[in-house]
Every structure is written in C-alpha cells, then in structure tokens.
Amino acid sequence: MNIDVVSGLLIPFAGTTLGAAMVFCMRNQLRDSVTHALEGFAAGVMVAASFFSLLAPAIEQSNDMGLFAFVPATLGFLCGAAFLLLLDTVIPHLHIGENEPEGPKTNLKRTTTMVLAVTLHNIPEGMAVGVVYAGWVSGSATISLAGAFSLALGIAIQNFPEGAIISMPLRAAGQSKPKAFGMGMLSGIVEPLAAAVTIVAAHLIVPVLPYLLGFAAGAMMYVVVEELIPEMSAGKHSNLATVIFMLGFALMMMLDVALG
Image 1 (cartoon, rainbow, N blue to C red):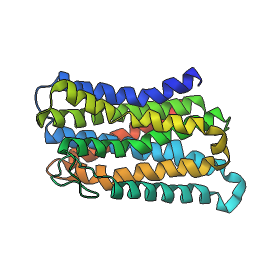
Image 2 (tube, one colour):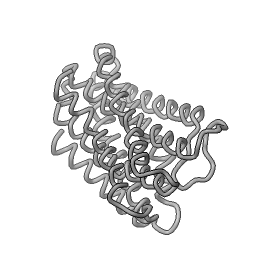
Image 3 (cartoon, rainbow, N blue to C red):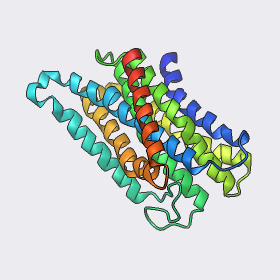
Image 4 (cartoon, rainbow, N blue to C red):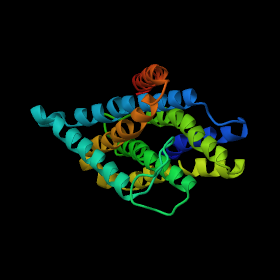
C-alpha cells in the first residue's frame, strides 16, 4: 500500500489510542457535562463528514445520471443505515450510561458489552475512511488525497474524546489503568481493519463508488441518530452538547473545504 494510504488509515486509530491514554492522566471518571460535550462534538463531526466528505462526492460522481443523480447516494445511504440496524440487532452491546445491554441476551461482562458498543460505532467510520481512500487510489476526479486526509483527520479528532469516553468508565468500573487503556484502544482497531479491507477491494469498488460513499454516510448517520444524539441530549447538559455539536460540525466543514 502507498505510504499516504497507510498513514491515512492509521490516523483515526491514533486518535482513539491517544484518547484512551487519558486514563493515565485523569484520576476520576469523566463528569456528565464533559461526556455530553464530547458526544456532541463527535456527532457534529460525523454529520458534517457524512455530507461534505461522502454524500456530496457521491452525488457529484453521479452527475451523468441527470435528474437521477441522487439515486446512488440515496440507495447507499439507506442500505448503510439498514446495515447498522442489523448489527445493532444481532450484536449485544451496552451504551454509556445505560444499565441494560441492547441486542440478544448475553452472559458477556458489562465491560465487554461497553467495548462492543464503541466498536459498532467505529465500523462506519473505518468504512468511510476506506471508501474515500479507495476512491483516491482509483483516480476518482471528485476525491483528492487532501480530501481523504481531511476526513481521516476529522475522524481522528472526534475519536480522541471517544477513546476517553470508553477507557475512563472502564477504569471507574474497577479495571486497572493498563487494561482500561488496552480495551479503549482495541475498540478503535476495527477502523483501520475495515478501511484496509475496502482499499484491498478498490478495483471492485470503483464502479459502485457513489453507492459505497452513500453507504458509509448512512451508517454514520445511523450511529449519530440512534446513539449520540440521545446520549448528548439526556440530563442537564443538552444545551452545552448542542453548542459543541455545532462547533464539531463547523470544524469538520472547515477541514473538508480547506483541505479537500
């Protein structure tokens, strides 16, 4: 693989790893206000990335379809959401702040289901980075290396707080700092793996790239609507989370426009 591609795929994982490492720097569990703000930021980045980095290029690549240029992005978007709904249904996972896991009944430990929840969250992000880099590798005129890098960087920025959001509760639940860090870090390993698989299949992806860009956007938006927005809006700090959401959206938009 090209060194630019390899580094791009690893940038989001580095964000998760650095965030998980906060468990060594902080003594107490994250306050609710901080958790809500971090979730709002992640949601803002993901919404902006879904449109500017994924849906807009998908529609632009389909311009030759005329009035029906929306079809690939729309079909991909709906299929991506359906795919995450399927994973949400068949994989047991526990969202931060909840007491009962979702999905099928399981005897897995609480900490394991918490990590599975974040891993599910990270799958569409890895797919998004992989699809965009696959588009660049294939020579797509609508995707530049700078644009692919801006998406990877934006995902890495929002992965930093996510790493802390998983490692800190694990520490508070009684895990040692090294184990909490390790589990937080491993929750993000699915991103470069999903991205690498996409890159390897790049020659197969080119004909359906607009559909896959939409697919990744739909999967990311499912995570935002099903998980992040409810969590950031719960309790007393919804206004703070909303403001941080707007800042996250603005940051990702600026990155994509300036670098893309």
